[in-house]
Structure formats: structure tokens, C-alpha cells
Amino acid sequence: MIQCDKKKFVHKLTNLQKSVHLLLTGSRKKFLLLLLIPLLAALAFFGQAGCAVVLNGEVLAVAADRETAKAAVEEYLTMLERTGGMPVTLNDEIKYRPTWKLQKTVSDKKEIRRLLAGALGKYEATGIFVDGKMVAVVKDNGSGKRVLEKLLNTYDNRGNGNVSFKQKVELKPVAAGKAELLSVEEAVERIRFGGTEPRTYTVKEGDTLWDVAAAVHLPVEELLQANPDLKPETMQIGREIKISRTSPLVDVLTTYTDTRREEILYRVQEKVSPDLFLGERKLVQRGQPGWREVVYNITLENGVEKSKEVLREKVLKEPVPQIIAKGNRKLLAFRGGNGRLAYPTVGGIVSPFGERWGRTHEGVDIGANYGSPVVAAEAGRVLRAGYRGGYGLCIDIAHGNGVVTRYAHLSSAAVKPGQRVERGQFIGRSGSSGNSTGPHLHFEVRVNGVPKNPSLFI
Image 1 (cartoon, rainbow, N blue to C red):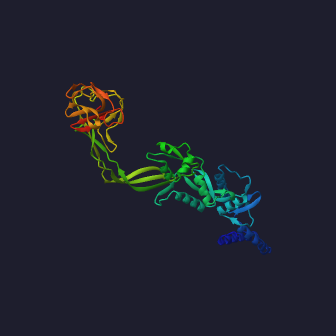
Image 2 (image 1 turned 45 degrees about the vertical axis):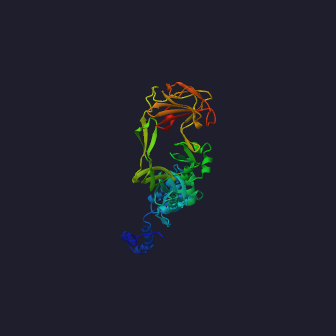
Image 3 (image 1 turned 90 degrees about the vertical axis):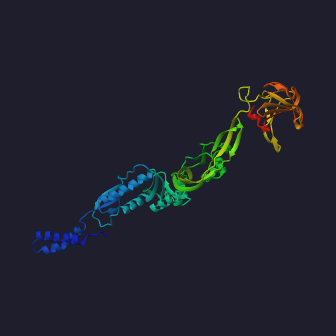
């Protein structure tokens, strides 16, 4: 029923009666009043005309006034425009006309929109918009909110992070057919995997393929299938790896703080030692790593780490530096002028100084052919020229300051003990005498009886 204020109705009716009473005189006055009272009551009751919303010649609803009717229709057309992405014009089909008919007056704009939507086959629904573009339609605002909550919760595995959308996400009323409506689960699926651009991961320092697979929550086999040219052993920093064939229509950012215990690498320090020969190095102090506690502010995009900011850190244990001593002492006042011993024969080093076959190899083996000439590495006096156990035919030359060079496994010797030799002077030929597996020259450098690595001096 149409609502009407009782006091206003009585007031209007009284005024009408007074006006008619003044106009009428005589015996007909009472009769005419009886006839006019119902008409006056109707005029008072319908003193304000309603506005009918007419669609294709049929009255759809009656609004309290034209402004209410027109506003409801324009809001509905705006919803259609949001849904289709282009302007919609239905004004030729929708008419507004005043009415005195006793019909249900609809003052609620939402009810008019609902009736209009039903007549056009489009119902009021909720559109999910990302940066102004509609990506899904659900039945109502509550369903839209549940979709957004599920999208955010997908990447909030820790439960203590600050989760938000990277893009601007809005819920707006739209008009949609029943076939266009998605369930909450369908809308979540479309928004998560509805993009056509493949997602990628940029390789960082220290990453392995297994690290990448763990970071993006995918099996290694699937990564290799998506990147057929990828070789794990040659993976370069900065390389982009495809991690899916689709992309989400909206990106979810997760920020959280994480406290980690990390190792602090020790520094390596070098100091010069006059007790070591030039080229010699000695470990003085072994380094030990330290430990620190670091609080990070970490940002993930769709579950993949994008940035990591240090909020604060605390050193739990200071690292101990590793100290290496390196020598600057010259072996001899070399005549060669380059600060090194002369190379004693032709050929490369085939067995270096150090541990070999469970014992220390106190010199280097030079792969010289049988009979190759051997020369003195520096000027000095011959101490020995003869056979010496496993060394076979051997020559020792003293150069002063406790420095002695030894030439072993010779096939012949061209000098005698006590003889003075010069740097580069011919002293014999290489061979395979003594404990030898084949022709070569075994060459040693000794300082005060202690073997030194010849490679430091030749």
C-alpha cells in the first residue's frame, strides 16, 4: 500500500471541504458535498504523482519520483558498462512517465535495479577488478571478499607476515548473467593462473637448481622441462629461469621479519717475515669463522623472495683472522740478476715438491731425456760427485750461506769434488741411475740441511 501521512491527509481534506462550501449554496449543497467527498479524498490521497519505469511498454516499477527512478536506472547502466568495458545506452527502451494508478510505489533504488536486471537477464553481482580491469565475477560482495582472502592466504605460509596485493584490487557492483558467475574456488583459480606471461626466477649468487626449485615450490624435473637448454652445472648469476607457463592476474606481496644465525668469514692477513726466503709462505695462525644473529625484513612476491633488508644484527662470536707469513729473504746474491736460480736442464717438472707415495719428495723431478746436459744453478764449489744410494750418480754444489743444490740420477758427471763452478756451467748429463723409474733429473735445494721447494727459486 502507498503510505500517506494521516495529519496531512485530514488537513487537505478539510481545506477542500471549506472551498467547496463557499462555492455551493441552496438545497443542493448537501447532495453535492456527498458526491464530492470521495473525489476530494482521492485527490488528497494522490496529491503527489509517482513515476513509472516503463521497459518496452511494460511498467516495471513505480518510484516515488522521477529522480529516484532515473538514478536507479543510471546506476544499473553504470554496472553494465563496468561489466562490458564500454558505454551502454538503453534510454530508448526505458521510459519515465507520471502515474496516478494505484500501484506499488518502490522508493528503494536497489529494488528498481534488481527488477531491471531481471527483465534484461542481467543480475546484480560483484566484479573483482585489478588496476581497473575486471578479472572475475562472483555472485555477491561477500563471495568477492572470500576470494581475496584465499588469494592472500595462499602465500602467507608463516601466518605472521604482512600480506597485500601489489596492484590496486577493488570489488565493484556489476551486472552479469548467471553463466558468467564463478564460484569462490573458480575465481581463485582464474586469478592465480589466468595470465599468459610466463613467470621467471633470476639466479642469485650461490643458487643451485635445487635451491631455485625449493624457492618456487616446484620439482626440479618440471624446471628442466620448462627450460630445455638449462644445464645445472653451468647456471650463471643473473640468468632468468622460467618457472611456469602462466602468471597470476594479481601479485601477492608478503613481508615478514626473520631472525637467522649466520657465519662470519674470517679475513686472511699476510705479514712479511725475514726468516723465510722470498717466495716461501708459512701459516702462522689458522683462521676461524665467527657468528652473528641477523634480523631481516624479507619481501616475497607470489612466494618468491624479491628483497632482503637488514634491520639489525648482533655479533655472537668475532672471527679469528688467518695469518700467513711470506718471506722476503733472498736465497743468494744471484749473479743472474733476476733473483732466481738457473734452470738446471731442459724439460718440465713432472713431479713436484711435497708429499708423494706416503713420504716427502724433497725435490722436483724434471722430465729430461737420457743424456740431456745438466748445468750448475748458481756459482759455487762442488761438495760431492759420485754415487749415493737411491740418488744414483749425484752432484752436490755449495753456494754459501748454507745453500746447497743437488742433481741426482745422472748418467755421467763432468766435475770433481772441490772444483769451482760458475752459474750455467756444464756439470753432467741426465740419466736413470739409482732408484729411478726412467730418465729424468731429480733437483733439490737445501738450506742448512733443510729441503726447500725448488720451484720457489728456479
